[in-house]
Image (cartoon, rainbow over all chains, first blue to last red; front, side, top):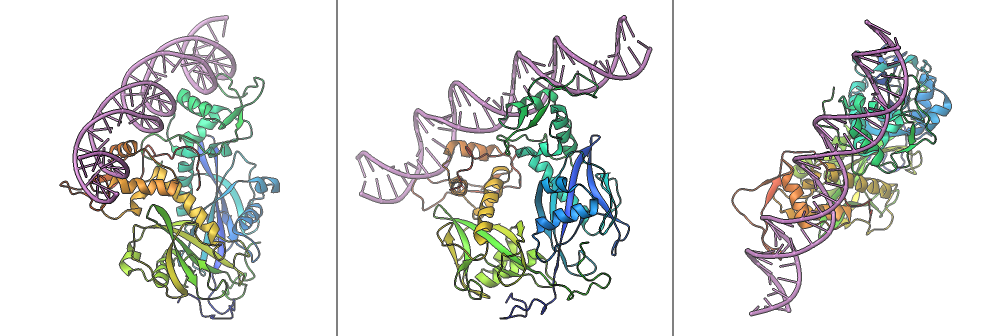
Length: 246
Length: 246
DNA sequence: TCCTTTAGAGTCATCCTGACTATAAATGAA
DNA sequence: TTCATTTATAGTCAGGATGACTCTAAAGGA
C-alpha cells in the first residue's frame, strides 16, 4: 500500500507533510571564470553560510514560478531579467535528512546568464553575490552536490545544444563564445577550429549587419554575432578528451 | 518571504502540505515495438484508467527507494529484478492542478528493461501490463506528458551513452541491439554501419568467448555479446535527420 | 531446391576534426 | 616610432568517422 493514512478522504493534514522547495544554480562567466550566484542565509539552519538562492514553493505555485519569485526576492535582480531567464529543471533532491528541520524535497533548477547587475540580498537572504565556482567553503544543505550536478549538466549540454549563447550578451564575438566553452569545460580550444565549427553549424549564430567591431579588447577587433534560431547542434561540438572537471 | 507560516518552530502541520509521489516510465522493446509498463488504477481518481506505476513517497524514504517499492508492489515483478533495475530521474512535475485531490508533486523516473516476466496488479493497481507505446487512450493525470518526456529523453541518451544495452538480455546479438535503436528512434539503420560503429567503440560491447550463436531467428546465426564497461559513447551515435518522433 | 532473411566482411567517397601556418589589425612597451 | 604581443580570421592537410553500397555465408521456409 502506498497511500498515506487517508484512505478515502484525502485529508491533507492527516499525515506528516513534505515541504517542497526550489533551489537555483545560476551560472555565469566573468573574467574567464565560472561564477555562481550565492546568497548568505539569514535564517536557521545554516545561518550566515552561503547557499543557493531558493525557498519554499507556495500552495498555488508551480516549481518554476516559485523559482523565479525566489530569485527575484533574494537577489534583487530586475523583474524583467528574472522573467526572461531561461530556467531548466536539473533534478530533484529527496534524501530524507537533507534538511535538519523537517522533510524537504527540493526541485533544483539551472539558469545560465550573461553578465548581470550585482545582486543584493532580500527575503531570507542577508546578502547575494557572484562568487567564482569553488571559491567558497562548503555550502549549506546539499548545495555543493547540486552545484556540481549543475556544472556537469551544463558542460554536457554545451556539447549538443546552442546553450552557450545564453552566457553571452545579445551581441557577442566568437572569442567571447569560445571563452564560455573554455571556462565551463576547463580546456583551451583551437580558435580557427572553433570558429569554423560555429560558423558552419546552420543557425548557431547570425552575423550582425555592417561591420561593427568589438572595442576594448587587446587584439584585432572582432565581428559581432547574435544567437541564431537553432537550439540543437548536429553534429555536436565535443569537448576534447574525457572531462577534466577542473 | 518564502518561508511558510511557521517562522521559528517549523511545525510540519501548520501549513497546507504537499504530497510527494513518484511515477515510473518503465520501457522495454518487445516484438520490434516500444512497450510501456502501465497499471490500471483501483482507486479514485481515474479509477479503472491506465496510469504509470507509482505512488506516495513515505516519510523516511528517498524518492528512488519509493520508486522501487511502488514498482514491486504494483507490478509483482521479482524483488531481485526491481532491486537491480537502473532507475534514472526524469524530471519533477509540479503544476498545481495536476492531481484533482490535492497538491501533488511527482518525481518521475525512467527505467529501461530487457524482456521481463508479465507483471500482475497489486497495491493500488488492479492490473499491470506491458502495452505498446501509444496504443492506449489518454492516461490518468499528466502521465501522457511524462511518457512523452521519457521517450524523448531515452532517444537522446541512446545517442551518447551505452544505455541501449539496458534494453537487452545479458547476452545479445548486434541485431537485437540494433532493434533497440530502430524501435526507440523509429528509423531503420544500416546493418553493416551499425555493426562497425558498435564494434569500434571501445567498451561498448564484449564478444562472448567461443563462437556461441543465436538460435531461433531466421537468417544466419549471430555472435553473442555482453554489455561492455563503457557508459559514454565518444563520439556519439547520432540518429539520422531530425527526430521523427513517431 | 530455391527464395528470403539476417550476419558479417569490405569498399569508397565525403564530411568533420585536429593540428598547423599565415596574415591582419589592434594595444602597450621600449 | 617601432616592435612585441595579442586576438581575429583565412587557409591547408591528413586522418578518422560516416553514409551508401556490394558481396558472401548460413540459416529457415515454401
